[in-house]
Length: 398
Image (tube, rainbow, N blue to C red; front, side, top):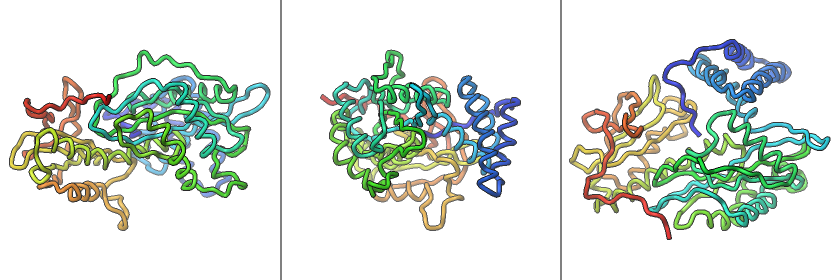
């Protein structure tokens, strides 16, 4: 998932300053031998902060390095994420390596995309196929019995760590983890969104985690994905009735959160066009899209506003987030920039008019509902609102 940077810098405490200094040392290290020394000291401080629930220390160090030293930031975020999503547990006299996995499904539908409790039968079937097609032969696994939306996922590093330990312990003991989902947040009614199952894989210390790591298997990631889609997807489809979805390869928590966020962006735009066609009873040729870069100092995301062609009212909006330093200036010559990718999707969808605004706009949100505001043709930030006569309430598939 995209990490939201704070608008106002957090105060740097002693541990945050130490993390910044250490990560800067790691960034300019000239050998793996030196790397290991820096990494060991950083990891020790990071684990201490995470286990104490001191996420602000980590966030302030990340915010500072993001602005001042990109190489140090990248080194630091990698070690923080590793400390949250992986650990070593000792149980019954044996050491086990544990990794938290995200099993993403990038979904789009005219109906409300489901989330919520997963029946035990489906959970057991998913674990069976996970072990058969993705995980190493000696791996153990346990899964949370819930289909998560991004709003319901563990958000901070300490929460991710708690999930890693809880599911990892259940995987080692081969017990069913227990959760209370009665206070889970509501799911945002989006046209295209990601859904996740969360699982932990546990293996004896130093052993392979995934099937593609095993020498005897002679499989690569693509082979495992093909088998996972062929055999595991039918069970996942039972959780998403009336919904089209792309099935991604199960992998480490933070990697797959970002990967699903990237993959959902084109579907969100295409789903928005289809939604407006149905709701406004119009064709794409009669729509206008307004692309605006939004951020405090650099473009953090593009906000795309939709209007009827020749009219000013913004009837719908889509946010296209950027990740890390994924922006027009840093894109390689051989790759399309994010803005070019957005324009290519609109060309494919036959949008009648595309207005590209060159300015950088401050990120503004509705004070009443918290929804992002979008830039209209007059370069004003406004709320996206459908006409009163349009019936846009999402319905559940029956």
